[in-house]
Length: 288
Image (cartoon, rainbow, N blue to C red; front, side, top):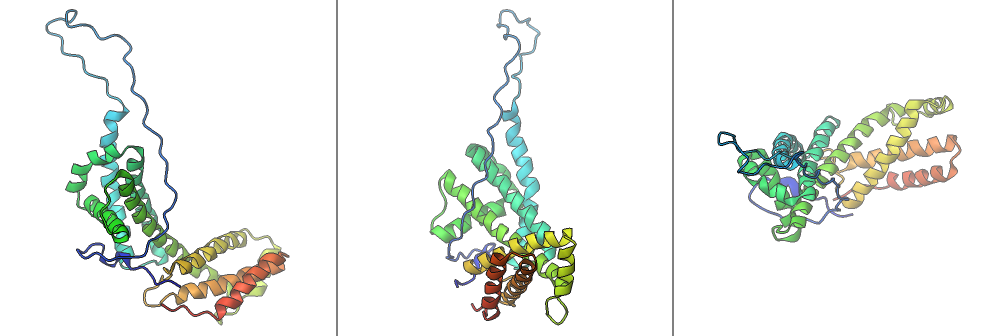
């Protein structure tokens, strides 16, 4: 088990720390801008124009409006990103932070889309970014993350793009942890206060083909796999100070719940899979 990453502990300070690299998600694609429009009539020559006639103005296209729209987007989204970063540095992944992380991820993706579509448009926003404290802090944080991993500042367009992807991925981990927090709460309804599984309740709901139960099965399956992946990455702390024991507890409960559900619904292969994981994690204690 690798040690948990503390990359964000010093992102808003002058010190920089060397951290282990994280996985990079697939790039988000964005279509090119629309082509220029053509004027309907030919432009008259200078001889044809009356002396008092004002010079013809060039018709504006989508390219003329795009930089302005980019500036509006980055300045509007930047406070949402900063809010997400604040919760990330506090290591607050409670269920109530789910929307905050979701909006923060979307905010960073605005920067990524601009860079992917046309890096020159991003550089045109330098004055806007430098003048906006939140935008500047986001850029500085992304570039510092890149330097933490590779030990030099990003120089090329692709390297700057990768820096923002690293920032987005860190916020995605926060989002995933907040998702796990919601499942940790939701799964309690299938257990007694004593900690034993409420088999009668689950069997009754399964017999009725209950829609909520089916949704929970799908959700707990996804979140169970997510919890396993976080443990493999060594970044499994959700509740600060608990050292990942809450994640371990969720894995134990979810695997027990899923194993029983697949047993009563006749899926022997999945029952054995989750039962084996349940037995393994019952004996497993997370340590740093």
